[in-house]
Image (tube, rainbow, N blue to C red; front, side, top):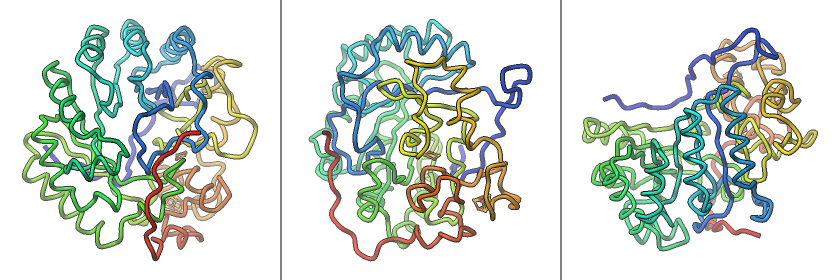
Length: 374
Ligand code: SF4
Ligand code: FES
């Protein structure tokens, strides 16, 4: 198996002529953010600072309708996410509904609250794959990052997932507080019997943006992490697929966020807002579309939000004339907005951006502020 170093070369989206907006691509995946509630308090949390209250979450009936519409639209994969999706008692019902529609189902979980009984329900419902988050290889350090004694529980949940013979991906968000532990984290993932290990440097959205200075690794840490990623691949590459996602702040190459705006995936928030990416709700403009007002097909093909940054016509200089514009799509619109105030600006992660200095690491590293909920 090879080490996948993700510097962001996307696959070409497929398109479907003859549909509304004939040049619009078909979506492959939907991120179903079932709830923003979560028992963990990770300082890198990318969910909005002002999370929607639980009382406004979509009902199970409404989610079933959203799944029906998604399948009609062409969606093949559903990622049940959050927050912590296990907090929804109807999770297994929704998984069963998606499977009955023929969709591949993926659960993205911290593992907290995933008892053997709940896992059995999910297996009966037909869950296809589980992604389990791990914060560190060392329990006290992991618990400090998560803001909850949870590491030992995660280890136990990984064993349950393997017993159930489900494919297991271990997800690790890398940042200044754990990046030096990359090798021991990989050893842990191998011990847990993971099929796949995703080591992705953190991004700075939602609550995580508040902690940018605390989270951003120093240049030396990133150099050592890259070396460690190669070493762990040599050691464990026969046991599991290893994906190492480089931080775009450091490479000078922006990530092709979402593989291009409105091309392959969309997200539905706990209250039914439909977004091209998880952070787009912050962008200025008309209110984002919701499943309460519109059909998913109308939102995907015709809404102002999804049309706004499709293709390359919206691009400013230097992206407009850049030969990489169809590979990285000018980077991330949300990062551009957060750092420059202009969602249409070239992503400052790009070394050609006139704002590239904005992604430089902070001189001092403050303490991380744990995630809080209103
Ligand atoms: Fe990508 Fe724009 Fe930078 Fe070119 S100038 S590499 S298209 S972000
Ligand atoms: Fe919104 Fe990148 S997170 S475009």
